[in-house]
Length: 146
Length: 146
Length: 146
Length: 146
Image (tube, rainbow over all chains, first blue to last red; front, side, top):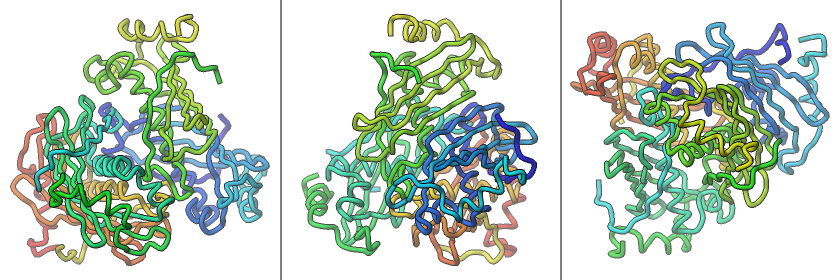
């Protein structure tokens, strides 16, 4: 997958006993949700609000249309899971995020997640509003600023 | 806790690998959600609709105000979890359900769950609408019919 | 993605209120876990045992190394989610499953999931044991039997 | 329930979009798991290790035998959920924790959780090992030190 930008957002996640299966590693079914939590935290950090406020206050939804994840190494509670998040590509009505998960300097997963922008109450596709474009544009890999 | 009525609703739940923790038994944090799934299934069976339709179509919410659970025996994927559900007490604006979970004829947990009836869109307490009272009344332990 | 075989396994899932987010549709983070539940149920049906028994009784693990999902239409509690599961490709030490989720004859998601076979206690890659190959071989698309 | 001690441990939890149901508040089925996460974090803070390490490294398990929760006010993503955790009572082979959840200075839930100490590999009840008693004793309400 594409190289990580130098400056990027890291969202730490505390993995616990209950996240693990009898193989003593995090159950695969839990991992996509952590990547989504990291993307939501990315919005909190960069836009000032997460999905809940985007949807209810700004009337902007970003439903997922695709995700893919490669699992490279098991995740355990022995280290925090550091999720590196960055926007990879802004389409006309979509945004693709990359999320890499690391523990103790070992890559645990690489993922790519594509969302479309919608007018939330109408559930109708739309280009991202200016407020959101202004946040995204300087952070995209080809902007020369990330 | 109170004795189970003779005729009652049983909701089977398939326990899986991912529900278990490294002790090879279902993680405690997952169990309350299964009891809630069983109560929702009880509504589907007796009212014809679960919480989603009650809230969105009938404007009736039933938020939980209390739950208590005693864990008697571990839950594993080796047997289906049979959740026995029955209404125990109808208050003026509340309903208390009992849920017993069993696997292979062994009691795994006993639980008691109290919800209040609300007008969903106003989030305001109300007595249960007639349609719901009519479903509940014949099923209560002191009705002589359960 | 590849066409579904004619005869295939369908695993129904009951979607509930608690699975939905404030947009009134199933939260994306929950969906990969349902596809995994469907794959586990496929093993239960075809091998007679799910992951828990495979791991603990047969010493065979099948950790995921990759998943990809395309989300085509929202999932709600108004219909059962029917998960169509079939093995798509058997590698030397891996197996790829396809899972399609449908509600009310509408395709909700398409997914592809790749697992490797391991000796569970050693966490070491291995070819699938004969007992498992014998189950898989007749069900693969190119076997002319599915 | 009993009064909170003056000095106590607070575990913050980030509530998100995906934790909420269509009523726009956290789904009840998710809440017990957060209280458990807070208790696990309490162990991490006071013993230096959470349940995973206690079980696998120290051979000490603490399965839950009872939980009760009163839900006082809805939980939303608009504020961090602050979970106040303290041990309430140490029995011969059991420990009872209290967990209060607050958002924006409003009490959201009060809970009480009882675990038994076991020798993890044998799944056999035991008194808490000295290392754990030494951590717990000064923090109990009747020790005059909390």
